[in-house]
Image: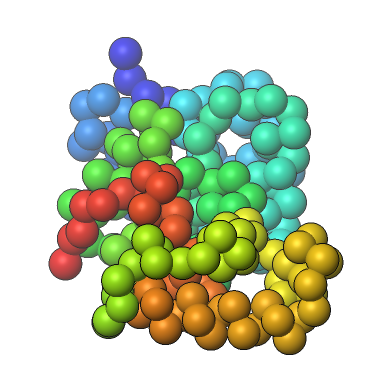
Length: 212
């Protein structure tokens, strides 16, 4: 049985291109299109597709709110967010909000096809370029982190800011900064978003496959 897809995009030409690609994939089929978030939600509600592809150009917060609304309604439809410009921080926030996939519109067709199939199957995918700052340059990974550092790293993965982490753990924001400094030194990962992405990858929430 073919996996059904709803496309929600700001650009009709982008929808046409994606529809043409889906037509070439024998195991998938576009069943609806919308040029607004609300219309896209109506299609998902009425058609219950396996996946919805939504354009990040609608705005980061509106897209995240849309995903939250979808999840709040108990829908099992997988969400793939794509856009011309998506940085690692935005990608992380969308995954944390409940998106199963994030990919750039400029991705190679092979990657886009694999991404569509992966997300439609209920698995998680993130554009290879999102991992550019998660590679370890030195250090020995998370095995040498203290229990407190592990807690801080896990809260970073959840998208919490330093003040929120401090409040959650009952410590000062300055102490959180010190823990993060030690975490970066031990793991060799650069930046809190790189840390969060690498953590999600290690836990199996993001694919290990890489494409050039």
